Amino acid sequence: NGEKESKKWVLMATARSPTNIAVIKYWGKRDETLILPVNGSISVTLEPSHLSATTTVAVSPSFDRDRMWLNGKEILLSGGRYQSCLREIRRRAEDVKDEERGICIKREDWEGLHVHIASFNNFPTAAGLASSAAGFACLGNVTLFMCSFCPCKLMNVKEETTELSSIARQGSGSACRSLYGGFVKWAMGNKEDGSDSIAVQLANETHWEDLVILIAVVCSRQKETSSTTGMRESVETSSLLQYRSQVVVPRRLIQMEEAIQKRDFPSFAKLTCADSNQFHSVCLDTSPPIFYMNDTSHRHVQLCFLIYCIYVHGEIRLIIGLVERWNQFEGTPQVAYTYDAGPNAVLIAPNRKVARLLLQRMLFYFPPPSEKELDSYVLGDTSILQEAGLHSRKDIEALLPQQKLKQMLHPKSILEISTILYARDQAVVQFCLVVMIKLC
Ligand code: DP6
Image (cartoon, rainbow, N blue to C red; front, top):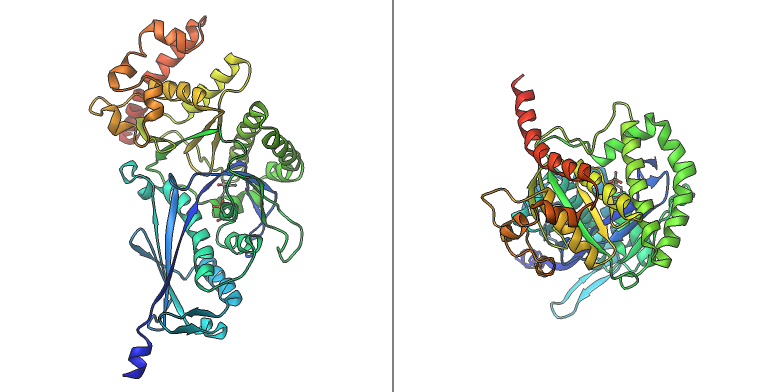
């Protein structure tokens, strides 16, 4: 009976983790077990109220094994990464006391105790993000990070954030950058034990507050290549990757740090787009080639602007064309785009004014399907929509007349307008083509 009583207690800790978007990409490991990268990377941490995962970790003597649930669904913890995160944390765990309940866990007791981890993301459920492959990649990152941080809190691990970032790194490389807000650099380090491969904050979240991030999430029906597998194949087969990691990225890291410090948007945007394009070129240079921005399948694109979500049907690469043409026309970058290991587009505008224009353009390119009203198409904080004068789908339709179109786009170029119109048609044609290919 006494033993039964002593097994009753459960201790819990909860923490929330943001996600981050790389503007200089991490792609390739020099050590697969310790997760040490072939080059440094820089990211922007996203506001956790919009995109984050909340994880609760519980420990009890009645638990007979470690278990983990993602959005209520149990996942296997047998993977090496989860195990190495938990092992690292257990190794650092300290005495934990809950005086109120008379519970005392000694440092050495942690080895024999098991944890239950439950993680939920706050992605708008209507956006279907949590179920998409792309959403899962993002969720995986934050969860692995939480898997490091949350038990640390519970086990009273007294480590510095840098030390925690090295535990998170062993869960998922890019997750180590989520330890800080604002702009974060993951220094590649060069020690064999990985002790200098850590994340450092370059500037906090108040440094460049005007930036606005818009994410276009694409639910692909195709199976994506995971980052882990993809980068392994790139390391083994791509010669461009060698050049990138040894020559290009070291230079870009310095330039990007400078652009961030000076809040120099044109340089920031140029570097961001160039690095995204080079990362996808490395994927294409991999054997067999990896197409993360593959556009042959019919896709639902959802845009989250802060938490705006727009559901559109169309070809994702049109977004690059849209941004490139706009930037070219203005003579200086208005908006930056970047794509991770999936077809999701992350668009960065320097301020709300440009973000409004971007939203107008995106809605024009990817108008809501006829059965959808704007408020079910664009979700979240709608204040910027109001500012853009977009209250209902009629307002988007009002963007259509040539006159308005001319104002929005290149004032002189008829070609520009026909390209846009072609793009709009193509979004539909794209779908038909897929059907035809399938029939053959
Ligand atoms: C394209 O961190 O998911 O998003 O370390 O194998 O878990 P593993 O890979 P992961 O890779 C992310 C790659 C990227 C670029 C980036 O975030 O820097």
